Image (tube, rainbow, N blue to C red; front, top):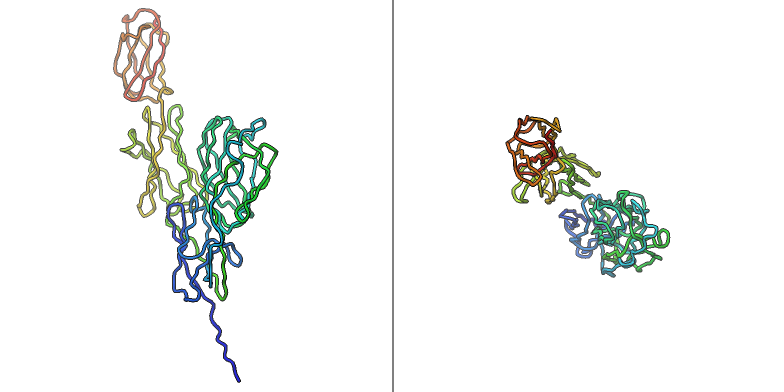
Length: 419
């Protein structure tokens, strides 16, 4: 008697990754045998955690820089979702009320948490500022190898105001830490957290001195899978996103004589340059400057631009990002309120007898008016940018007057004295 054995080749899957907005989609490609109809996606080869089963699978990331560079896929005889849902962990936001010894500046960290589910999307958590001017904070999440897997900047309010930090990022099973960096002016409310675990979902251990735990109401969704695989090969699939630039913040701040703009990107592909555009009505924009882009980058890049000639009142700004192939993508609009009262002019001599010279400092031409103590106009003339001599002779009596400069963009005043 004889027996015949047939050695079957391992099942070899194929897959692709596409990017859209704040997510990546894992899609099966190629033919899959009928007896192995299920795709399984892993975070790493040979023992990585399951990211999802089936096709397509969509994972949420704050930006493509936070997404994995590669995933691994294989086919399975059977797959199922063993558990899934959404939940919260941590103290209630109202428990962030202890400020006798608050965290000052950057929140002391890092703050640990452990993902127990196959995949967990951390939606958000709450923090609460105690004192300090409103401004930017940077949230960084690292894995157990101290590799940054998420980083984003937020603008937060102050003065006992709770703020929800939206993360919306998927994390595979593993250990992580959260760090919150801020300016030294920030101080943070804390509460007491004794630690806790939602079985099969997430663990949030005890952290720091009593009363100083700074995070509350961590919201998340999770999924666990059951997979049976035999006779299959894992195939690596690399991430290739078409988004040219991942812009994580774009802010502006009024200074004494300008508006200072800054923006940050986490990754760039074929980024040639930015046009900086301004509008007085939020509808009609004009280009006011250009800033070179970073080309190709997977690190955080920061940019600055100073608008030295803003409009008095509300200024609207946006960026128009250009690829090397000429394709352009606009950013979201921001608005900055600017008051030109910081700009000034000088008068010399002052006091004066018959004449004085007016020198405009960073001001365009406009109208000069001399007012008496009752606000009555006694003299006026047009003036151009630069320095101009005002000859009054005996038109004014001895005394104090107000010299007012005005144009369509604002008003500036200065006291003058006739001797």
